[in-house]
Image (cartoon, rainbow, N blue to C red; front, side, top):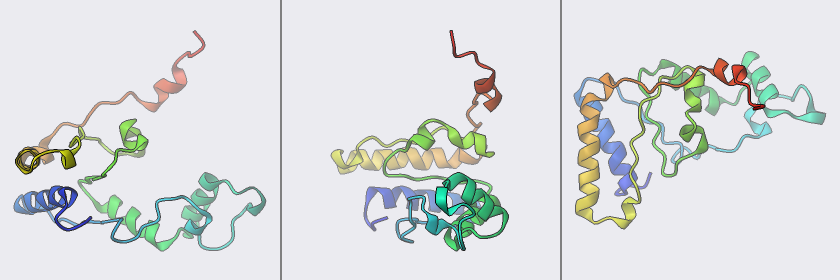
Length: 161
């Protein structure tokens, strides 16, 4: 995150509010870490099990089971596993989050906090957005998670109608 940006201010507000509530806060700034967002063979240490037909999902599952995932991925997995609360802060929304896929990964998902086009707002309006975020953070740990249909519903649905 760029210091002085609205995105950095949102992160700083969360860190400050959660620390004031007694939380131990750890920030993983994937941009600053130059974390590779693309899925490639480089995510696996050692040779692929089927190099002639590389299937990322199968190969990374095997690598995870055998302890051969890249260390940067393992480090972030460890942080997620140890966390009681995770805030994914993205400049742009992604389909993964919009579709609620995370609930199928064992997460309880809270309602999103969306800031629409802050670069097109006045400084006063941006400060108003930050104040709303700070207010929400005061009760974030007590928010009820969103409800999603179980994964089985998709399999049970008759989509041939």
